[in-house]
Image 1: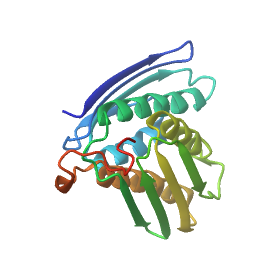
Image 2 (image 1 turned 90 degrees about the vertical axis):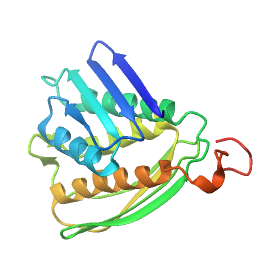
Image 3 (image 1 turned 45 degrees about the vertical axis):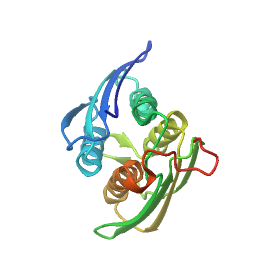
Image 4 (image 1 turned 90 degrees about the horizontal axis):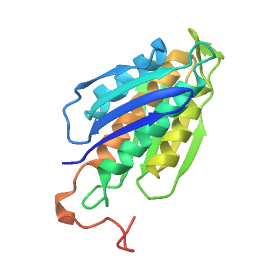
Length: 195
């Protein structure tokens, strides 16, 4: 079973993540941040992972700590659930439309952390949510998951649609990259024999 549970407790946040890479899109999201809950619910639905994400944070300050720490915990859970990465497809990409928005995303589950983020929003906030926090979430996630992840926005006008396309594309590429390739027969997909 490719499952993991991670708990992260700091003076600023308490985060609990359970993740099953071979799930059916079941679980629940509760972060206390409406727009972030919406984005993570989209991630849950489109990844088809089973995911529970519970965050209690100092949202009276702002949403930064809660969003960043959610990314840290989810990244740790992702890495733990993958184990030695034996048999995975490893690479995936998508060009995902969301109304007027067109988002390209590619991933390499490489063991090397890198985020390329060429995404522009045309408002600072969606509701009360700071758009810049999406990049902070993704940075925290890739550093702890140890993956290479690229986003390039090809078109877009509406900030909500742009960020929605980011989360849907992320879910879809991770789902494809973590799928088991039966031809590998459990082998690690690298000429080096390790990722």
